[in-house]
Image (cartoon, rainbow, N blue to C red):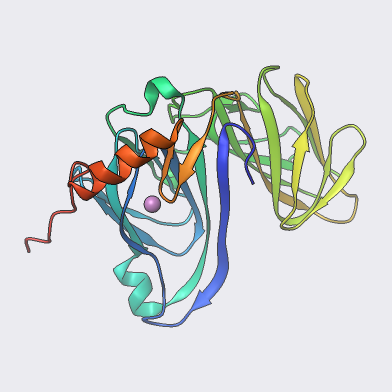
Length: 260
Ligand code: CO
């Protein structure tokens, strides 16, 4: 999936791991974009070369702006490794415009309890407002470029008009159930994505007999050339080569060893 400004939507799981089986991504670099991790179930711990460390549990969001470069690790939490369980979540890569690709790295970590939630007046639509606005609630996360990231659950027969700024592209990704997308109520099933056309609102409904659980992502396209290789997303090949040599020269730092 690559729908400007989104580079990737990775649906992690759901997968059940036994004790000691969980997997993650040990030390690796990023430059030139943002990684957004949203967990529904399980537990991750992360560390990075700028000295940040944290834990991610169900409903928590980590919005990492890699900018000029970080080295980080994303691994199952100690508790998850001990007990096993269901790991389920998303990682979304959001591109940065050329002017921000070399910005200082930034982390925003929002626990589930701080993510605004709203419910429609008929009680059939619930939304978690990770970025942007919905049903009168505004997100607490600051995005570098205008982005909306909304997690909707709609009960059978429910529906909502979601305002989307006219200059945004909009996609919906269905986690489970069936979403009826747009004015034609096109069915979008589990694991499928809808890409909406231009407009200032999207119509999101659930079928009369089944619920819909999905993510809505919108953003302003950057309309810039993309040079992408592995963990780096820049505008030109030369910038990618520079990223590899900066990483190899240790300019993105490394994760400090545990001192305890
Ligand atoms: Co990473």
